[in-house]
Image (cartoon, rainbow, N blue to C red; front, side, top):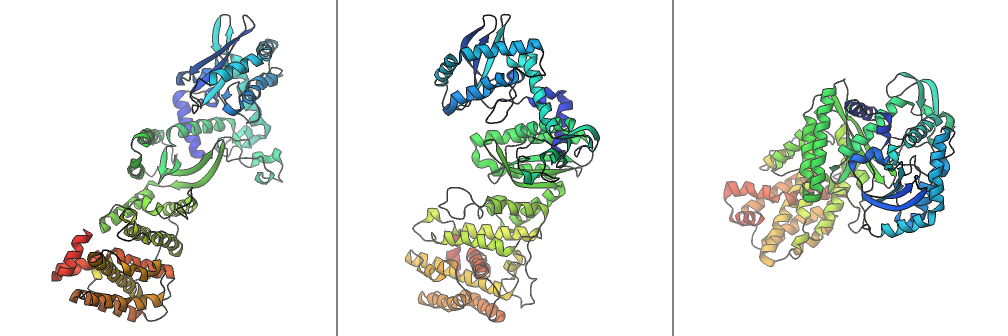
Length: 600
């Protein structure tokens, strides 16, 4: 992944002819900056000037970030509204205390910095009062910055217009790189032997060497360069690459989880890399706009992005970096590396096949529906890790355990069946959840990520076309029997709703926690109910006959978990319409005709 970032950074540096200083300077994270006006001509403090940040003045602001408890490499910083005094002392006054005596400076440069330091020190109380006063006039939620502006020889200039501040910034970065380094060693990125390689890489903050356990070579910090030796040229390319990616390829969302998309060339082809970066940059802009205006469209854009990626040459691969950023800390949630366009194409082809087979629109959001919260009452999404693990396996083609999946399928379905009655239709997601679960299973099976028993030799069923439609999901007698019992149950519930306005038979389903004995006793109860309603038609007798036949063939000890038993049963409930359609087409059964009209 870091090699991919380096490729992007080098392309951008060559394109824009960027020097090291331009790479180090970042876009300020604040919209408004408070400037302390230092008048060297009069040796005075001339108040505070508030101005909006302009992107064209990036090099003039000379913004870079540093440690939270000390000064940044340049005297500019975000203001902590609750700690204005600390921000002023740590980020401005201490900056001049630290760098005005640097041995790398000339005599005149030291005099220049000390003159500013003295004016700030003499007027610190006035400066603080003015800052606190002017901050109140800026909207509370708006991020603010603090810096200085210097009047010299009647010219009012930003810090970035003075060479001394640029010099110090470059020196600070050089010292940081040289702090943990080695001479005449090979760079792990470009593979070239360099005069200096550094181990103090800061492209991503999840890489750290501040803990002994993270250091190769006896836990000695001086040997940390062995972890990941990088030459200074590659370091600047990577920092530029990170900047470009963050600004142009970090608005992508996978089912609501933010990720960074990083293309990587396998064979050198700068034109191809330029092309894909332009496509991703344009898509990123489109998504940023939709996030404000049409938030529901993220699914459409997500599918479009994958489609675009799948149609690129096999000269490149993709890295999907799911990064959780909290304040200044970064934590990798998932990194999917080196995914070829052909793999993405195969995933989309499987999705399209499911859509064609079911007549519905399947997306990764259907899988996500089962991996959000372990309890609906929880405030935060605590199942993101499980969902990302599944996505990782989908992209890399790794086997997924059906028993693991089904546990989450049934948790959701069991929650939804509690609302499956006539009085709470607005909460009735029961059939939608079953449908999502079945489509997800078909999708995984299509990609050979889960496997079921091969279809056993059985007498041909009148429902053969229904079972074939779902591959090997209902491939054994017991699964087919459970499916038909579920279908009969749904037909009965529809009958009850039509005649009584409620579904009392739902109580018999034990919130879908039934075992083998429950299913076997359920079938005669369903038949009795149909007979009570005088609706035990010829068509329904046929379904019962098939169900009894399959369960009799399966024998005792089905070797299925309770989750599996209830999954196949629920599948039958959801697809009862497919069973009814067979008789409606062949026999024009009036009972089924009415029920079909109701289901729509």
